[in-house]
Image 1 (cartoon, helix red, strand yellow):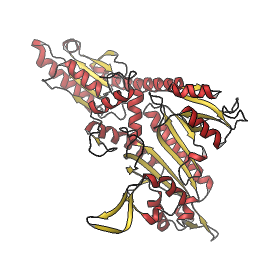
Image 2 (image 1 turned 60 degrees about the vertical axis):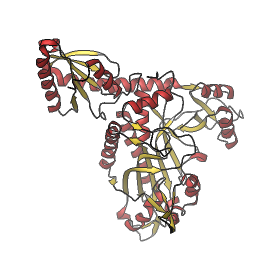
Image 3 (image 1 turned 135 degrees about the vertical axis):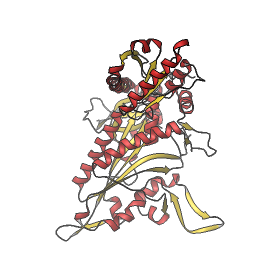
Image 4 (image 1 turned 180 degrees about the vertical axis):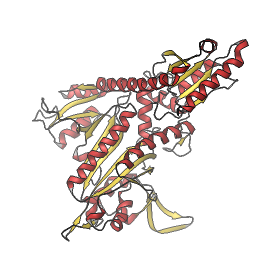
Length: 474
């Protein structure tokens, strides 16, 4: 198998294929099949997120995948931003359709026509909904499994509010939700406010969660947008206030990239043995592997079944690998590739001592626990694993960020597959120069942290407005 640090791209593809995450051999470019293991991981991520959203009043809904052209065209900036990526539906059999439709690239223009029916007065606000669906964008760049696809999984939340302050509370609330989910998965990233020239089409402002990647490119795993009144004006989305006046609602939208979050988990935590999964989303959290030996084969197997039942009864997702066609070493290799957090080995010595040997997937360290302490030992390893992978991921993020005070330093940072931290005067011409000469792009400035620029703009040597981050991106 390819080494992660020698060739990340090939390693990434191998892990996704060998661990039954996705199969990219589907005969349409940019589309892939989520296999059994990958689908279960995706389901775990989605359930984590949906639980958080619904606890804060976001109702689950499912909107149709098609959007009529006239709805899509209502917000001029929005259609301009997405038009080149749209998949159009113009025919049904041999018949040309009277009205063209498109597959959703995002759902604002599908949702707001219905919001106009549901929102009449201030009593109907706020309205908060979410859906976990596929979206479709005809990416013109080279496609990559999970990272850049033409059909990808995400969760989108859409909300309507009576005033700017409530819309702002929503943005901050969703940022908190996304942070909790990403941190539970051990991921590290920068939360950045995008420059105005690169915000979501139709937004007042946009936030992005940019995860580090071993190849130096950032992976945008989530976004949050305050849309202000832009879409409500286009769709005549108003409400009657307490004084009888009619006002435009304010809307927000947020996107959690499920496919890209899976990519980040694979890229940040995986190693030369395969996946390393956070315990909370692992389809199997513990695999029990019997290690039989000659005359005690039957006794070892019986003890392994007891270990399995003890773990299962504790509510832990566990699998007993009693396949007699594979040797224990082969089983170790297989489940390490799949990223199962803990392996419970049961051999003759464990049988004799009434103990179990536990192996952590992240560092392959092994410890022995008594049968009576089995569940507490596993729970402790789960906590230890998420702490370890989170700490390692954060250290990698910090190591990937380098200071750049000059254009030569900025170019060197991007060339060396780093994220450059630099100053910017705010000028479009300087932003274009940074992109043209460095090969990276301005990702934005920190949303979660106030950073005062100490150096002049590296392009024009002018007074800086922001500390920004520059990197290549997927």
